[in-house]
Amino acid sequence: MARKPGVLQEMFSDATTNLELGQYLEAFKSACGAVLEQHDRGGVSITKNRDGYMVLNKSAGSGAPTAALGRLAELTKGLGADQAAAMQGDLDSLRAYVQGTVNKDWTPSNPVGGTGITPYDLEPMLKLLVPLYTRLRNSIPRLSGQGNARKFKRIDSFTNAGIPGGAANLMPFFSSTTSQNVVFGANNAQGSVPTYGAALNRPPKISYTGSDHSVGYVELGFSDSVDMITQFEALGFDDPRSVSHLALMWAHFMGEERADLYGRSSGSGYEGAISAPVVTVASSATGGTVAANTYYIYVTALSGPSTGGGNFESVPSTVVNTGALSGSTNQFTVTVATEPAGALGYGLYIGTTTGPTNAHFVGTFVGNTITVTATPGTGGPNPSTTDSSANANGYDGLLTVSADPTLSGYVQRVNGKFSTANPGSEIDTALQTMYVNNGADPDEILMTGALRTEYNQLMRVGTGSGAASGYRTTVETGDGNAILGTVVGGHMNPNTGKVVEVETHRFMPNGCVTIRSTSLPIPDSRVPAPIAKVNVQDMMILDWPDIQMSYDASTYQVGTLVHHAPAWNGVLLGVQ
Image (cartoon, rainbow, N blue to C red; front, side):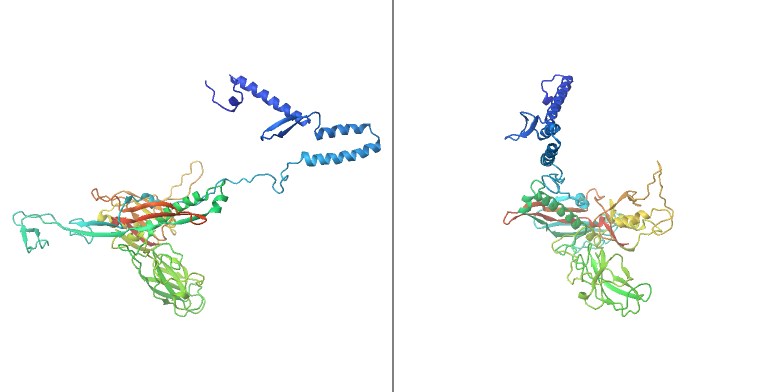
């Protein structure tokens, strides 16, 4: 059997068998041991020649300092006491010098102080600990576009499609001898006589409804910069420019993911800004710890995750106030009496004097009410009087269109928790409505991690909070180790028997649940998917010319998100 090449074969190439290899190796080890032993006796030294190679130098005699010390020690035996004492002092000084300057030249702290020549164990690359998440972007078809806008026309319904607000539902019965139906003419109304043309004995004529759409393409991109000195100083450790390009690319991808989920545009053909909510307030002298004062309240409608101060927010509501509260056990409840279309949640601002500049961000809430039981702080930002719920340079995302009752297949503001008496009833109602209206058979349900945890709790045993009687969790012990927890991985569509996948989305705004179709149950729809990304130019990275002492780069994309069939998606809002 052929031997694999290795280090020994390279060292002893004339060996023909493994036995010879072993013999050569032992001889080599013996020779090395002899040299080291000779070195220790002072008969040989190891130095570096001009070419940088280590060489052995045989001494002319036993000239090593340690050997010389040994011979001097033997001489003291033939001296008198006084001479021996004097010479012993010289020997001790020489021994200390030799051992301190020769034997111990290389120590953990010498010849370099502190850490000596011990290397830093620095791993040779930066660690990128950024979670990457592009669920929607990865699943939405990407199409090629051209021009400055995407135009498409839809046949939204025709006779007997059963679409709410669409063409009428008619029976197909007729008599070929007596039924007169309009088949052409200026007046196409069923059963009427046209102003020109003819009413003939033919089956009833069908009708259509349609719509014309045009959405402008928008630009997407981010930029980053690396100082030249940073780039050069990092050579041999990492490449900052490559890290910059990688971070820039993923920042763009995840920015697109957020836009695909809750982007909202005020450009032509898009949803536009959300209206300000209408708010009321009611106070109580008991039940809380709100201090005596008069509190002025503003509420904004949210189009995405907000931290206040004009971040995905409508303009503030008209101010309402609690009236003069006395004592120190007050509380008050703020109610959004009129919820504007498209609002995904609400931002709460409270001040002790009137005017938006005197109110401060308290927090966000889902549902249409929030009860304030403690005195609100004054450290948050003020509400912006400029709308930020929509971006003139953006496009509409899945949540934005699904929350529009004129386009969506289903919109329901739950304004409370999932039902524990009838677990899953909110989803059942949505699936039933969407199926009846247009035969929708959705593929996935997306929600926040907190809402999915609530949904999972509906399967727990018991009658306490978050538990539903009649459901069980089976615990399998196996080898004695129990696994606790229940996860709802799917929801059975009661209309079609299909299991709709239940998943979380990291960027989902609080209180929102989307019911999404990734395909249409219509064989000849000529639609690749209910939602498609159409790009004139897909994402690219531009390295700008070096006109300053830095390396600059940008991402760039031109396109939009097209909602071909929004009625096959739905949304639940205000789920607490």
